Image 1 (tube, each protein chain N blue to C red):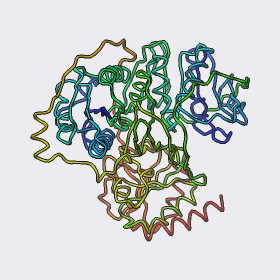
Image 2: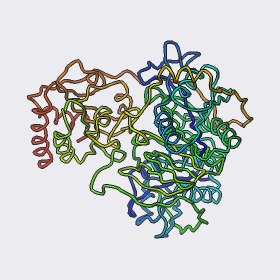
Image 3: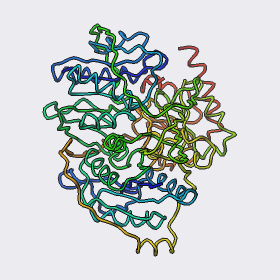
Image 4: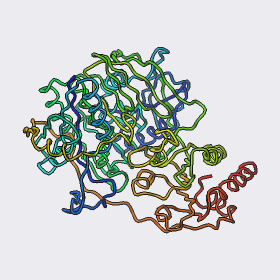
Length: 248
Length: 318
């Protein structure tokens, strides 16, 4: 089984979010970047397929050279090859088109993307990708088993779960549940040394017409201060929630 | 020309998201000088959508039809072609987010998710969406002929605008989806986090899963969904699907009550779309107090039981 894991290179979850260039660019100053958490669950699940079922695992990112440390980290965790599509991602459709090209050229059976990236929170790349390559698709996937060309996937739905039977080629939008938080791997020194020798291929993007244009960013208004209510005066809290906030 | 929506129902009854999407689409349609058409599947009272500005309902009656993303995407493609729709509005439910990408791929449409207000302009078609897990807003201009918008849950609200919907039978060709549903495991008696007006959420301060009756009892009184912080789900005290925050589920309820949750930045980001936030925590320095509207410095084990009793009394007298 050939697996491709799509990796977004995103600011650490604790990052301060600021913008530059008249609020049109994310300010990367002082920000450390990580593997998008939803993608990392998928990468770890892919490593299990590699170890238990003999799959090969490639990782791909659409980004400029600054994303390479994130791809190297994936190699250190155990991916076999990395591919970087040399382009700054402009929108979901563009990214999906690039991934589709890589997917077609590589003949992958299983493509694992995250449910969404924690930076732009688009959450639609994986669906567009599945459509562009004509693969089966399961979103918000919290469990996946593959036997031969048959796959069983668990999809998180509002208020529960749905078990789906499908077949390869398959694209999933993964998240926590594919593996647990405690299953995530921290690269060891041997992995880091080996990662330096593994292939990281840079490919040029394929043309694609624009579907959207990113505009400016803004930040939410600062929040007013909290109204403290004495723990012995819960009637007041109920009164405030009823009359002031009007939520009960 | 009309603005097209997919109005979700469950067991024949519209979800709140259906009315919110209709309300939003009516606003877009007014700005574009057109009307709203809805696609519904097995809805009992399809005409109800008229109350929220839907002029025409394409109603599919087919008991054998259950949600499959590819099939539903094909239904919307056919409806959009029939209606000449240039704007398609979807909710942010699990099902709608599932089919949105597929639909965009088929229609070669620009797509914006997490949209929180009516378009800033309709020509060009510019919307404002949240990014960086509610830490920022971003304006995005969709430049394609067909545009797809996912409206954030509970961001736009319900706006009544009775137009008297015309309900017509719709029998599109159904694309086969080679995905089979083997089973669905869904608690039918519980409010889901996605649909809940009120969410009661617990953190490590509750000391163990055996104390979750506090959260559940409070949620019962308020008709609320229950949720938890990331450490609680990571420790296995509660199932993953209750984990709310940046890497868990987003919450956009009217009222969010955080009990024994300190308020890590990732948690606060994920719940910040909630309109009113209440925190109950023993530590007055807990970061959640900076994000909350109302706070109680106190021990959950003492405060919550009293709060439950007082809320019961309040509910029975109101």
